[in-house]
Length: 426
Image (cartoon, one colour):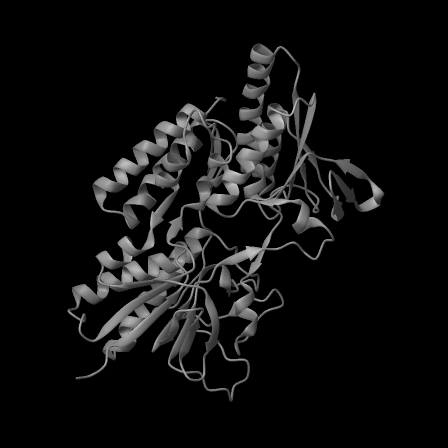
């Protein structure tokens, strides 16, 4: 009996999970269950819908507890993959042998692959700034969001008259978190005054090394977001890279010191460190360079790789027609996943109609506190309540892609109910 072709996907983020689901559907639809199998490997048991983490970090315990929040932000990978005939392994990757086609897992043996999809995502980049990692809180995983929430509550109960929260990084994560946090803290100030009869003022500051927040976005978007943040009371310090971080004190360039009680780091990501150990062509930031079919390129032309190796999402550097690397956004990862899934099936079936990935200007939505967001869809820009309503529709559309219809609706409604209660601002 012919052995099944092994399609191994490393990582179950937006790109990896989408690739697994599309491959599962193609295999089932084509009656190929006996000839190939999809295997997904991830160190976490749950897929996390990361665009809602800023809301988790600012949801009061009275509004939602750990269990409720987890049910609307994280989704079991095994259930999603198994439903489509695939296999899930929860394990950390120890090493990859791309010449012999082996994935070595910590305490879980070795998996052989015929097709490998690298969807390892990114990890927090601290840019070798002394003291930054030790003295800051990242906002990348569900548990990170809970730790930030608990720390904010701890500070509120500390009895201090002024609490300084600094957000390092003025990208979309930083500004989204700042906007939502400002609303929660304003509400908390009133509660403390009414219940404990004392003053407690929170101050939020965003630090950005570049000349403005949201670098790379159109000037009109940046201006509207800046106005929104300032109207909420957040301070923005641009053109000030962080040089060093100590306990309760940040040293900026120009020797300016900035005191803080909580430092949340949202200043950037880098390719997963495992990517740098592979004999693949990498760009200067450690991401893999790929050809149009999303296939990885070897370090040298004479190097022979085992099977076919693809990469998608934050692990990839793909250049647009102007020679610029495309941004690492979820929509790009999911588009790349579709290309890879199609091309793997074509290869297995011996077909020649492979697809090429062509980057585009992806639409985006940036929520800034309460029921306010700014969205760009091609030439159209929507802001305010309309942008927020569009964000809600995007969320239900994504949940429908990874969950059965009624489960998706249930999770969406539960999340909508919790986060609407949590919206203190119009």
